[in-house]
Each structure stands twice: as structure tokens, then as C-alpha cells.
Image (cartoon, rainbow, N blue to C red):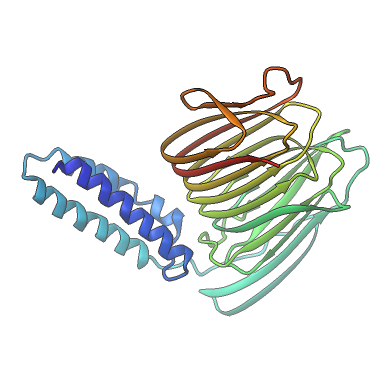
Length: 307
């Protein structure tokens, strides 16, 4: 049996087991810390070209992977935190037993200016569960509960536009365990949504909003995205690691889906295969406005449906 097949099989099985155990809360580790071990891949690559027998390569590889996991699992948490002043309306409640084990709730908002016609949400987050589905009379609301991370916000405005930035504070603990955040947006302006997250569960029902673009960049993620009617072209870009991706678009909407995945399961209901990695709805050519979806993922379960 080929060593390469065994090697990559072991790597994929290991990653799958880690994700499953993490999702079941049987183990916890920071994807940020795991990424810091990327040199292990160089070591494994070097092992693969050693002039030794395959079973020796396999043993060395397994020891290397196990050692890397052990380093991540025993990495001490950052146990300091501070406070940053913001000009936005907010509340901050911290509940902790000691500096290494605390949880905090945060609430931010910004009043809506009726002159705002377009807006951008730029969200940079750690691991956690994030829900975006309900409108608000404010420009935005951000309500976070639990977890050991802190966020900071800022809003930049011009005569007709606004840029909302929600970001992790530099001194924030970065694993995000137990974090759940609800984001609400005003339904009046046209939105561009940019999301950069770690290992996250993203639930985004944007059917109530006028959304022009969605850009998602994340690690191992579960993504639910529902788009609504819009009288302009829409563009959705998803770049993720090991992911479960579910996308929903209106039946009347013309849509094109491009996929670039290493290992994937695809279910595209109501789409025709045009060529490799390219799918379109029946009404695509005749439609005046269209939705373009581009998905890049290492290992994914992709499902696109109309509603």
C-alpha cells in the first residue's frame, strides 16, 4: 500500500476526529494555536522524502502529529485583559472566578442616520457561534454573551455611507470558547458584508436585508446563508477550511455557483452543470440581475437550494 495514501488518510482522519471531539465539547483547543504549528507540515513533508521504509515514515509521522497535538492541548491560556474606551453605546459585564477563567457579555450599537444609503459590516472574530438575522432601528447592534474574548467597535461615516468595524481587541484571549454573538443590521441601506472568523458556526439569514456582497474567510466552519430579493447583482465569496456550507436563494433569482474544493460533497438543487466546477440556474442567461457565488474550501459539504 502506498505510504502517501496512508499518510494523507491519517491526516484527514485526525483532523476529522479533532473537529468532531471539539464540536462535542469533549476537548478544546484554539485554532489560532493550531495554526501556529504549521511548520509540522514541513516536517511531515521532509519525512515523506526520507530514504527509509514506508512503515518507518508512518511511525515518525504519527509521532510528529501526536507531539503537535500535545503541544496545542497543553498550551497555557493568556490570562490578562484590559479595557478600551469606545465612543459607541455599549454595556460590558464580566463574570470571572480568576484571571484564567472568566466570561463576559458585551453590547454595542450605533444610531442610524437616515442619510446613510450604503453600509459595510467588517467583522473579524475568533471561534464561536454568530447569528445575523434580525433587523434593528439602529445602524447595527452587537450582543455577545459568554466566552473569553473581547471586541472593539468603530464606525466611519461620510455623507451617504457608513463602515462598521467589529474586531477582536489585540489583548483579547483568542480561543473564543463558549462565545455566542447576535448581530442586527438596519434594513434600509444596501449592505456589503465582510466576515473573517476562526472555527465558527455562522447563521446568516440576510433575506430581510438588501445585500450586495458577502465575503467570508474562515477556518473550520459551519455556514448557513440565506439571501433575499435584490434589484442589483449580488456577489458571494466563501473561502473556508473544512466546512459545512448551506446556501439558500430565492427561486426567482438567477444564480451561478463556482466551486473550487479539494474534497467535497455537492448538492445543488435547481442548477445545471455547465462545465467542471460551474453551475447555473435555468433562468441565468435571460435574467437582468444575477447572484454569483464562488466557493473555495479544502474539505466541504456544499448544499445550495432555492426557496
